[in-house]
Amino acid sequence: MRVPSVPETGSTVSNPVIPGFYPDPSVCRAGEDYYLACSSFEYFPGVPVFHSRDLVHWTQIGNALDRPSQLRLPPDAPSSGGIYAPTLRHHDGRFWLIVTNVSGDGNLLFTATDPAGPWSDPIRLPGVHGIDPDLAWDDDGTCWCTVAGVSQVRIDPYTGETLGEPRRLWSGTPGAKAPEAPHLYHIGDYWYLLIAEGGTERCHGVSIARGRTPEGPFEPCPDNPVLTHRGTDHPIQNTGHADLVQGPDGSWWMVLLGVRPRGGTPGWHVLGRETFLVPVDWVDGWPVVGELSPVMAAPPWPLQPGAAESHRDDFDLGEPGPRWVSPRRRPPEDCTTKERPGWLTLRARGGSLDETDVTFVGRRQQHLSCRVRALIDPAQGRGGLAVRLDEQHHYAIEAASGEVRVRARVGPLDSVVASRPTPEGPVVLRIEVAAVQDVRDARTGPDTVSIGVEEPDGTFVRLASLDGKYLSTEVAGGFTGRVIGMFASGGSVHFDWFDYEPTDD
Ligand code: 6LW
Image 1 (cartoon, rainbow, N blue to C red):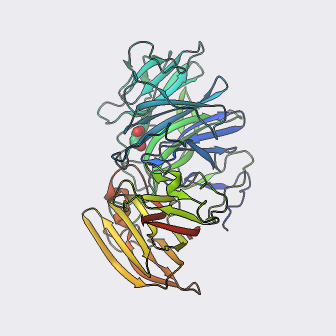
Image 2 (cartoon, protein in one colour):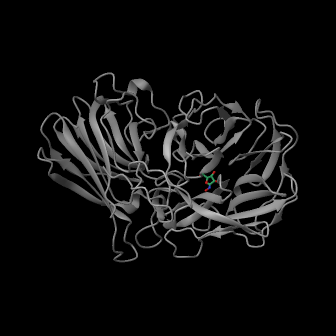
Image 3 (tube, rainbow, N blue to C red):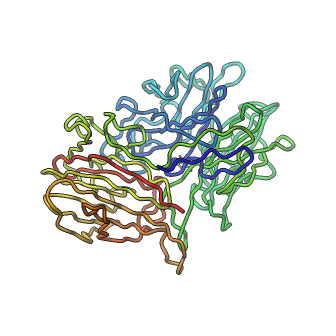
């Protein structure tokens, strides 16, 4: 079990602070506690919520949208559709979360007294149009909702009613595309408007403007973008979509998304857009963002122990924990520990991994190299382990009636790349992801995905080794990253345990 040690104050900590596909982070503080929420797209439950006491070590405490009345994702909701960019705030003794369901009801507002949940049913915002909604309150209690573009409208957060007409505030740096991810802050004598611009790919950047009132007018920072890695060979790319938070000691910090491309050109990122942390200073009333690095100086306060990086689930605790997600929905009858206590039974809804209604229960891949194992009893069903980006991009090993087959689906190509007879009954399936250490040429992929079974003595029988570039966002497109999990594609299959272990150096 790999548990990160607690670094001494003054030492270093690693970035991303939340590895894996946890993009569009929004952070707030309540007393000594920090809370952070991320986008979740087509996955259910949605909007993972994290807690930290030091901004470095984060523990998932739930998912804000954990019931169908909060999160309607129809079967035709595309992968990378669904839930975009949240804003999480603490105001008036409550937690407020605003998101956009681009495949459903548009902008929705939720509240909770405990960010671990339960969160309320949605308050609809029919008069708020656009994505990346932000919430900010004036001293007189006025609630300002600002969206990508960047425009703003006053709302009643208790009813969702818009109070007045939307107004355009600022469209970012002239010539830069996609001014989005707005966040409005009242800091000192100014109202600051933080945005992302340049698009969430390699040209992504963070810019800021300030004004004397929440409605502006806003003057752009002369040093915009205040953070970008565009045009560099920095190991962290696509940096943008930031949020600011002040620590109890008065220091300022920024969380933002970034990616870690590996391999040859153009660089392939497989873990999706991850959450990073960087310090912020203020000079002449403008933020000066510190250097964003994979290894950063630890904040100047006591650090909490980090969560274990390896994870084994024996399915002895009933409901799957908050890290487990499924595409679009997860009816309890399709994913249960009641049918065979101590086992997770997955019942196929008829769909395969190529279908939007597949029965799949997975967790984000959070390490560039890792080993995933699971013991499956296929019984009279068909199912197995898969590394998924979406319905058109996945590698899987499937067990059924005395045989395992390795399948690779990449766009229009779909192939059984290996098969092997196995004894009837339970079998351990294994997926090993090994990040590339030396880039042989421009076409070198980011990693190798090896798939196979274990002999009864634990010996790994590798049935296929596949280039991981085809399961990267640069190939598949979209906004998510790899999710590794268990699936049923016929009848019911049973899993005794699932084991995820980082194997990074
Ligand atoms: C999100 C936009 C963005 O709404 O990508 O990186 C979109 N920024 O702000 C989906 O994550």
